[in-house]
Length: 349
Image (cartoon, rainbow, N blue to C red; front, side, top):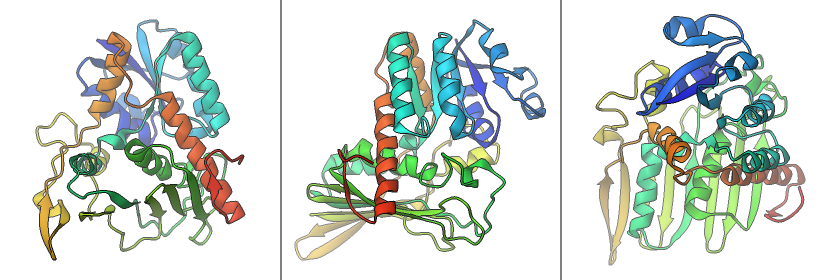
C-alpha cells in the first residue's frame, strides 16, 4: 500500500484529489496538510491532519506527496518534497512559468523521483471518446479540431486566488492547461500559436476568456473558454475529410465529485445516451448520422498510473516534459495576445 500525503484542502484537494486517491487500489490517503480550519478532520476523521510541511515530511512512511495548493506555491512545495526523497504529483499547471517547470524537471531527474501533473482530464469520457474515434480513422484526415470549456459565472470572484490577477491566475492557466494538454496529447507540438486572452466581466482582475489557435500542417486546432457563456458552445467539434463529430455535453465526473459522490460506485463515469456525441459520416453524396457511445471516464486511472510508475517503474502517462510543454504553450499564447500576432513555437516570448 502506497501512503499518500495531500498538501492543501481547498476545492482541488477536497473534490478532485482526496476522493480519487482514497478509491484507487494500492493507495492510502495517510495524511492531509490543512494549514487552517478543520474540514479535513470532519470529512476524514481517521486520517492524520498536520499544519506544516515539515510535519508531513517527518512521516517517512509517506512516499507520494500531492500538491493541491495555489499555483504560486507549486514550485517551492514540489521542490522541497522531491529533495526530501518523495515522489510528487502537482495540480496543474506544474508551475507559473516554464522556467520553474524546467527546474522541477531537473530536480526530479537528479533525485530519481517520479514527478507528474494532475492532468485528470485525459481520463474524461468525452476526451477518451474523441481519442478512440480519431484513432479509428472513421473521420478521415482531421482538418479542424475545436474544444470549448465554457461556464457562466457573471460575477467576478476577485477574493479567490484563481481570479486575483496575481501570477498564475486566470482561465488560461486554469482551464487552458487542460485543453492545451489534451490537444497536444492528440496532435503533438504545434508549429505556431495565435491567441487572444481577455477580461470580459465587470470588475474582473484576471483574464476570464481566451481563444487559442494551435497551427499544425494541414490541421487547425481552436481552444476556447468564456466565463460569460450563458449558452455554452459544443464541448467538441471535429471536422475530417470523411466525417465530423460533435459532442455537446461535458464529462459528468466533476459534477459528481463536487456533490461528494465516490468514484468507486459501479456507474462511475457512465454517461446517459441522451448526452452522447454524434458522428456525421459521408456516404457518397449523402451523410449518415450515428450516435457515438461515450467511453467510461475514470480519474483513478491517473493515480493508478502514478502508483505503477513508483512501484514498478512503468512509464508515466503525464510526464514532466508534458507539463513543461503545456506551460510553454501558455506563455506563447499570452505573448501572442499581447503582440496581436502569430508566434512560432521556437520563438522567444
